[in-house]
Image 1 (cartoon, rainbow, N blue to C red):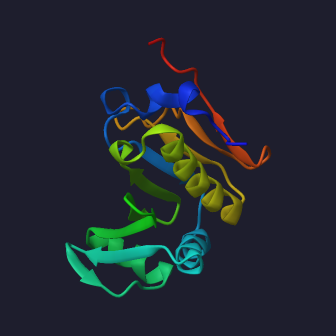
Image 2 (image 1 turned 30 degrees about the vertical axis):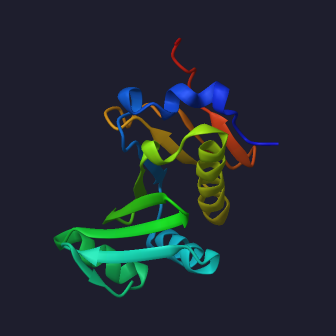
Length: 160
């Protein structure tokens, strides 16, 4: 059974409401957590591309990536499923921040792909992973709850 149903969350997948690139975040992280995410990307066989200031480079260890990210625009693009791009931004060790493109996630299949990603990261780290509107990062609408071991709603969808 899916974590979330399209009919229950479709408004949260509306780019007009959420922005086209909502913010996904894991708070209270460390360099080791970042490395665990990089190891997850590799172990899952997800396609990825790392770049600094727009120049593609070899994916470094997390410690190097975070040091470089302080002075460069360090981005890790990951495709956990065909047609679904996730962009990790190496701002700091204290949080893992990434964007998803809602235009790539339509219908129940899109919800399932997003839930699989949030679950994989949340389970690997044992931490909540929350998705919030692009313009309102302090009010998450859904996320992985490690105690429930599933993706749950964190806000009521707006009335259509």
